[in-house]
Image (cartoon, rainbow, N blue to C red; front, top):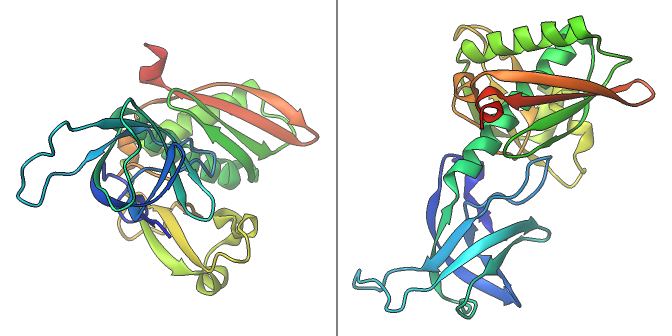
Amino acid sequence: MTDRLHLADDSLLRFEATVERVLDDRVVLDRTAFYATGGGQPHDTGTLRVAEGDNGEPISEDPVWRVVDVEKKDTVYHTLDGDAPIPATGTRVVGEVDAERRRNHSRYHTAQHLLSALLLSEFDAPTTGNQLYDDHAHLDAAYDRFEADDLDRIARRLNELVEEARPVTSYTMDRETAEATLDTERTRLDLLPDSITELRIVEIGGRDPDDDPYDQTACAGTHVGDTAEIGEVVVTGRETKGADEERVRFVLADHLEE
């Protein structure tokens, strides 16, 4: 099973690994910092190249492969594109994650956690689904209808939380302890398969260090270090997605200017 390095350090963008398996245009690595599509977050992209030789000198004719897709099934599969033959099993490689794409996904994912916590706390509207991209996102919530005044209130409160620079941290916890001690409505543990017995909890802290966390959610996605890194969030609209379900769309302000 591939060691997913981003679970311990989601700021990691460069790493070394060994090719364990080759399947046509895909490779399995013993370790990776590339995020695989899941949890509403798209996969990372980036590059793989052959690592330096044992004496520290670069390998001659250094090929570069573009990582164009990352998928998690029984393990993590990296789909490669490039002119050179796919690196063979046992090859030492260096992976580099596209920094801008990763950062955008991390900002949107943390904004989604804030929005989910806000809607649950202030509207009793639990999140039922979400999807983020590198330039916009949306969240579905169990709620009758958000009016224009509601959206204004949501946007105002969301940006207050962003400006407070609340710390964002992650840690592991066994499922039994999580179910016994955490708010399962917030952590959404019921959405996880029973086979998952160890959880990664992403926590957004309180306004002050002694305050209770604002949010604690079981999540394998990537996130920023504190909410201020998200930047201004613009709520761009809503739509009905079925009986008692609303979709809220949002975008980071700096993406509106592009």
